[in-house]
Amino acid sequence: MATKLIVDCSTGITTEVELTAEEIAQREADAQAWALIEAEREATASAKAAARASAEAKLSALGLTADEIAALIS
Amino acid sequence: MAVTYKLIETVTVGVGGAANIEFTSIPQTYTDLHLVTSIRESRTDAASANGVSWNLRFNSLTTNQSQRSLYYAGAIPSALSGLDAGFFMWSTTGLDTSNVFASGQVYIPNYAGSSYKSFSSEQIGENNGSSGGRLHAGLWSSTAAITSIQMFPSTGTFVEYSSASLYGIKNS
Image (spheres, rainbow over the protein chains, first blue to last red):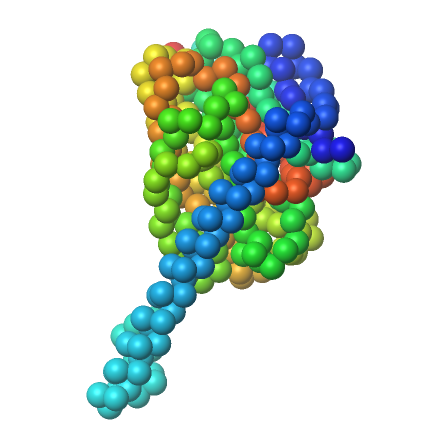
């Protein structure tokens, strides 16, 4: 069973207690929210990678060397 | 000389990990709060390869939260903004080098007042040249004083030796 640590700042006492059903449900909701953020992050990263590859291809077509392209976009 | 920076409480996760960490009954006698963390999550799935976001809440509530973050996981920086059920911090995971924890801090001014609570945070997790981190601005649009702070992992648990220390700051 999952447990949580509760630190009572008025007494300085830390206790370890099992999660309630409501807290377990909230954890599942949190996981879903996290998954959405991850998906957004992945989409952003993929879009940037695709744009970079496209830019490199166009610069190469213009006659720039790999070193020159790297100097421009690194 | 007045004590202007005082440790309220600190907690270190023990064997078996913790599903969350909670500071309760926070004294209302300070001007600001400063939360300092050393965090590592247990998860080892592929999606956590470059770090994950743990979740911060005030007074156990998930409403009236807005945020904007600059973050990076691996090589590519990204931005995040919007309304979310929680404020997102940063953690290393079970896929990172053993015993590597993410360092972070959250600064919460005027936590005991009746105005909305804005705060700043910076988090970083380094793993042998492959790192992640988050620079975060958050706003909890509530007039309630902050009396408790909750820390939740994305999934799984905070591993043993993860720690959090809550400091109170006075302006005089």
